[in-house]
Length: 285
Ligand code: ACO
Ligand code: LMR
Image 1 (cartoon, protein in one colour):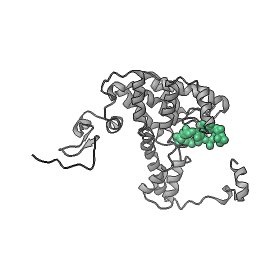
Image 2 (spheres, helix red, strand yellow):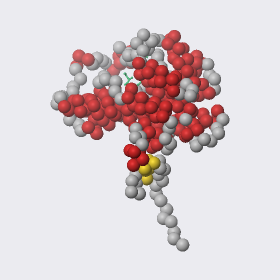
Image 3 (cartoon, protein in one colour):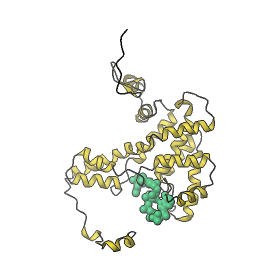
Image 4 (cartoon, protein in one colour):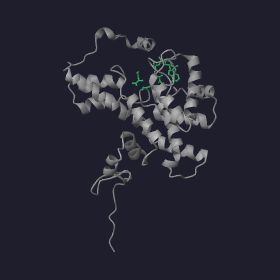
């Protein structure tokens, strides 16, 4: 008989060998004929299932609300500086994307996992926050530079309102809101931020769509939570911010190139030129 050649790579996501490419088994002509949108494509290529319409719409809403937040945030600032240094679109985009991390846009996965742990293990919200403080950690998904209890983040409100209407359950969001209620007692800017809101709601989404994701396997609550955690641990939720914010970053890069903006140099009068030995005490000024 014929010997099968050992393969160097395994792929379970897409297949380009036939007449048309398939995304998780769905041919391109079907995607177009049945008007699949970007949320459907993300659900096929990332989760390998077509998620139900309420979930797909939520993914698309996340992309819309996280696409941009003005020129001053870390990512846009970096992309603008790179574009003004004469770098091309890909390099400037990458410069912006590389700021996405634990403080900016990249706290979604950890926020989701932590809020799930807190809710599943019935940890009282004050204990949840204080235990992270004892461990010297900031609560992922909490805190914002310019948003506060007095100046709410409308993105968080819009996503939450949608989820309350369309999700089968919002128990992880509710837990995140209990955490927020506690952190707001400490400081007015310790709000549930957009990363935390997307994280908690995505945990609700994946739990609510478990039948689709896990082929109707009848999982008990613990098994479902474990299965959802295993998906989140792969890093897809921070990936959603990357996809969304790339749209805005490219917009900023094109904007700078269109206006032929010159090399950026930060003004001297905005820098405190401090002695090394003074620097630690001046850090928060
Ligand atoms: N958990 C616990 N305490 C916090 C948190 C938090 N998430 N955020 C701030 N604090 C407290 C700390 O005690 C901090 O004091 P410290 O510097 O001694 O640790 C104090 O508040 C001062 O906070 P701020 O001056 O408001 O901090 P800053 O404005 O620099 O931080 C930030 C904003 C980076 C978002 C912060 O709140 C944080 O790290 N949050 C967690 C990560 C996160 O969710 N990032 C996503 C933000 S949304 C987005 O980027 C799209
Ligand atoms: C963002 O979406 O970029 C933010 O919420 C961060 C910010 O500082 O506005």
